[in-house]
Length: 142
Image 1 (cartoon, rainbow, N blue to C red):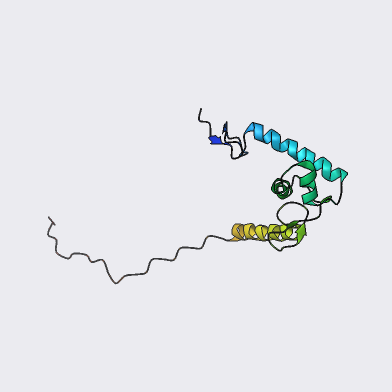
Image 2: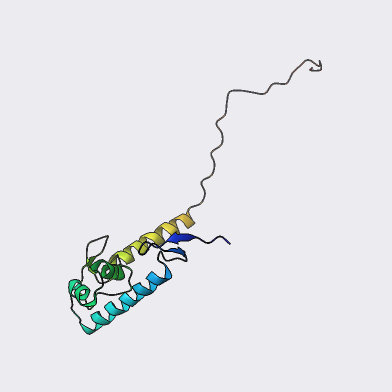
């Protein structure tokens, strides 16, 4: 068995990597912080990220990460995130709906284009001036 062992970036403990880059203890702590933030935002709509951080004890950067990951929406928070493509204010994730649709359409057109494209036929090799000759004498070659 070849376990992929890593050190947790938060606490430094050694753990078996399973898709998330945190040990089980830190994952549970992060989930607890998420639930506290989620409840506060639900109960205090319109709160700023700074207020949420002060009242819950959860770091501002962690709250922003919850927003970027799409785990939390900023409906209750003032919108602090911007679309990484166009700069429009968004409530969660990294891209606005318009940019997501545009990128999806671009990707689909590229995929469709690659499926339609036939392989180009190979060009024949250029002819050389060398020719084949038949030997006229009947002597066997050595």
